[in-house]
Image (cartoon, rainbow, N blue to C red; front, side):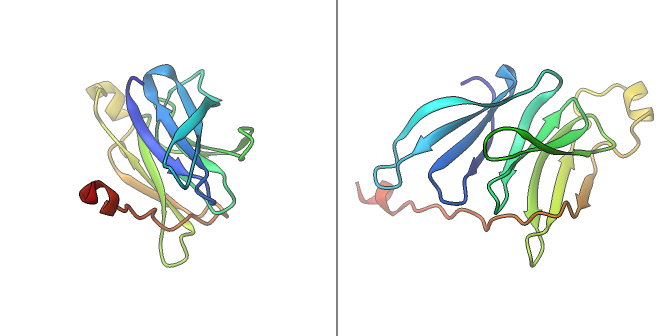
Length: 152
C-alpha cells in the first residue's frame, strides 16, 4: 500500500475495492463477513493515464473511480471491464459519490492542487463540485460498527 485513497464495498458486502494512487490500480479483496478478514487481493482495474483517487460502488456493483490527472470518472462493471466514462472539465478529479433522495445523482469533487496559473486559466471550473445523473443508483452509506473495538 502506498497512497491509499478510495474504499468501497460490493452490494453484498463480500468484496472491498481499494484505490492505491501510486500503483495506478484499484485492487479488490474478498471480505469475510463473519471474521472481518481480507484475503485474495487482486487487480481490479489499472490506469495507464491518471491515478485512481476516490471511488464509490453503485447498486448494480459497478465501481465508479475518480481519475486524478485525467479529468474523468470511470465506471467499471463488477468483472472489471470498462462500463462508461464521465468527462469532467477539470484535470484533478478527486472523488465521487451518489447522493439525493434516490441516490441517483453522481456528485464529483475536483481540486486545484498542483495546477499552475496557466493550467487553471484553461480550467476555470477546477476545484468545483459537479453533479450528473448517469443512469445508475448508488448504495446507502456503509455503517461503521465500533462496538467490537470498544468491547475488546
